[in-house]
Length: 307
Ligand SMILES: C[S@@+](CC[C@H](N)C(=O)[O-])C[C@H]1O[C@@H](n2cnc3c(N)ncnc32)[C@H](O)[C@@H]1O
Image 1 (cartoon, helix red, strand yellow):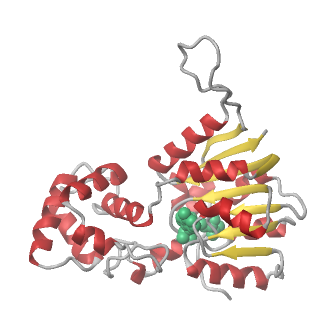
Image 2 (cartoon, protein in one colour; image 1 turned 180 degrees about the vertical axis):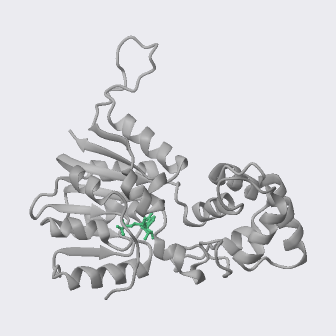
Image 3 (tube, helix red, strand yellow; image 1 turned 90 degrees about the horizontal axis):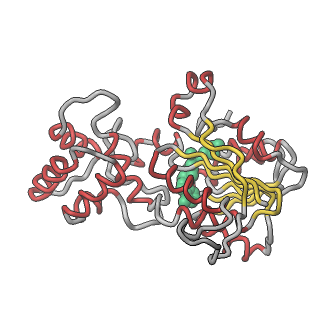
């Protein structure tokens, strides 16, 4: 029995959208526990997948081999933003479909020493890719107050950002803040009790996004993937918060629009041609899935099809 890693979100909806073809090649940019990719393999597809986390590559390799799929997949420990380079290096011209299931896996949240969760006391880390230098420790202890404020406002939409940052600066002036537990205490002392989740939720989300550069180049990466689709192939994206969802939604809309000229210009001068049509906009998990898997509550599935 393999250990628990992650429960895939909206797996049936993703499979419905992808319409997997026998021997078609599918790009899974966010492999995680390999649940979605396994479904694609079981439907007869082949997988090219990336994940920044070595644990995901190791786990999924074991999973796929245990199901007899050796030779049907290629897993690369890389950022999905490198999609074009990866395809170039492998001599792949076009793919039959793609999936991005953004954010963090349950495994990353549940492993205390990864430092993603406010539920455990662990070193401040939050790196998806542990080969990377920048960690949550560096941000908390070394970023200027103004940078911390920007991150908490922009990535955490934290209305008590000023108080939290001022207390972080006070505490780190005495000695470095080393653990998630110390940070949680500072946050708890900075914000009044509020409904709707743990007081550290938004700060932790903001830090995680900054550590892993989650929003940087996300729209451009999605566009690269769309460029790599065959005609009629589909790309699915699952988002979990409004910041990443906004980026994907806007990019999909642009890619599905023929002309991007200002409305005041009577004839098109930009020559932009739609590359995709919108298939699903903001599909939510079923009630049943939300009951079993609370993580699916905030998920939104968006799907485009290459023209
Ligand atoms: C929500 S999980 C994916 C779960 C997966 N779909 C499944 O069914 O098990 C997201 C995964 O994507 C990885 N990830 C996030 N951003 C990434 C990026 N830019 N490049 C590569 N992997 C990334 C994370 O390390 C994590 O393992």
